[in-house]
Every structure is written in C-alpha cells, then in structure tokens.
Amino acid sequence: MGRRKKGQDIHGWVLLDKPLNMTSTQAVSAVRRLFDAKKAGHAGTLDPLATGMLPIALGEATKTVPLAQDAGKTYRFTIRWGVSTDTLDAEGSEIATSDVRPDAAAIRDALSDFVGDIEQIPPKYSAIKIDGERAYDLARAGEEIELAARPVRIDRLDLVDTPSPDEAVFEMDCGKGTYVRAIARDLSAKLGTEGHISALRRTAVGVFEESAAISLDELADLAHKGRAFEGLAPVETALDDIPALAVTEEEASHLRQGRSIVLLPRIAQELRAQRRPRDLSGKDGSRMAVAMHGEMAVALGDAQAGKFVPSRVFNHSI
Picture (cartoon, rainbow, N blue to C red):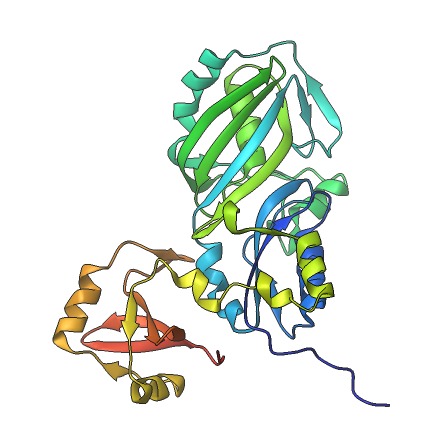
C-alpha cells in the first residue's frame, strides 16, 4: 500500500466568516480539506452559536497565529432579557427568569462599569482547565466548580439598538480572553434582571476585518472551480501593524539560518521610533519587527542593541 498523502504546502490566511452551528475545529478541517493543506490552525475560538471572523492559518501562516490570538477583537451581540441559562447563551437550559426589562437609559448608565481593565469570572461552560479537566466537561457532569476572576480589558462597549423590550444589541472592542457571555451575565445582574446571549458575531480580529471575510460556501465554490487561492490572503496579512525592516538577499539568507543581522544606526532609530506597547502571551513584544525581502516576510524578531534577532523564520515562496 502506498503512503497516505499528507497534503500540500499551502501558505496564507483564510479569513473565514464562520457559519452558525459549526465549531471552530470543524471550520478549520473544512478549510484544510478544500485546500488539501498540510498544516492549519485558527486564531481564536468561536462558539458554535457564534458567527463571523475566524482567521484560519495555513502552512507558514501558522507561525503568525499568536499575533492574531493576542490582538484585539470586535463583537456585535444581542442580550435577551428575562431569562438566564446555565451556559449563558441560547444553547443552554433555563435556570432563572425575571420580569425586569431595562430601558436604554438604564443600560447605558450601567455600561461604564464594564469598560477599561476589569476583573471577569469566566463562564463555567468554558475551555478553561481545572486540575487538567476542561471546565465545560466538569459542568456537564454536574460538578460544582468555581472559577477565579481574571483581568481582561474592554476598550469600548456601546448599546447600538433596542429592537424590543426583550432585547438589546451591543458592540464591543476587547482584549484577549474576554468572554461575551460573562458580559451578559454580569450586566444583567447589574441591571437587576436575568439575561443571556441570543446572538453573537465577531466582526474583527486585529487587522482582520469583516469586509475581507469569505463564507465557507463561497470558498467551496471557488475550490470547485479550481480557484481556491482567490480566497487566500498572504502570510504577511497578519503582520500589517508590525514595523517592517527591509533586508537584502544576503541578510535574508542569514536570517533564514537563524542568525542575527546588524542594523544601521539610522534603521535602528527608525524602528525604535515605531515601538508601541505589545503584549504577546504575557511577554513584552514592543521591540518586535518583521524582516521583509521585497513583498515577502523573511522573519519575525526583535530589534535591540543595534541588531535584529530572529525568533520565527518563514520558509515559503511567492
């Protein structure tokens, strides 16, 4: 028997508009099959009941996944007042009800408590691990669990519509690790009512915006016509907000070997001027830059002490 094919070396980003009732893992598998790609991963899980931006990395783009995962996110979501569920969304079982329906003025007055650096207790139905077990597995088994509050950052939380007394629609810009379902729980409590998420859509992940997203059906149609690559964005798309360093072919060769290169004083000064705070999984990423040879990313690394030191090297071709 011949060896099973492992797939092709496909490199780039699929900015998928994830459909309803599909897990993020299922979405990655579907995209991977359409491209017959060797390697794939995603930048930030979306629940099955959530739709919208799910950036899927193929090949060398997977090396930039941590940047997208740590980037800010934008959500549009609806809270249905009057009913709380065990999962804090429409998929769960009803656990409490209330006759209170907050008006727009009361909602807006309460929102300021949820903007900035706040402490948030994650939902019990979440992927957080407790003694090696996922919280949602323990919750489904009927175990009583307590999750500690964690610091999260919310940059913007706006009420954008109240289509009925039972519903309110919001938009939120937030940092990594923020749970929209927990916002519904805590805001409902603040307003003296019950509530849960009835609709959730992610409209942006870092530099990836909704306007660039492609549906799974559109991608499948392109693949059927042999044009799947039209739905593939370059590896470099995830690096648009990172300072760029132009390098020569010789310097690119050194970097691909994992060797650092010396920066001219003027270049080093320019990169210092472009520094901004950047948290990468708890580490300081303010010195990060991307070395570019023409239009192609060669390496990610840190510009420090007059040198560029590579940390991730890309091995893809145009």
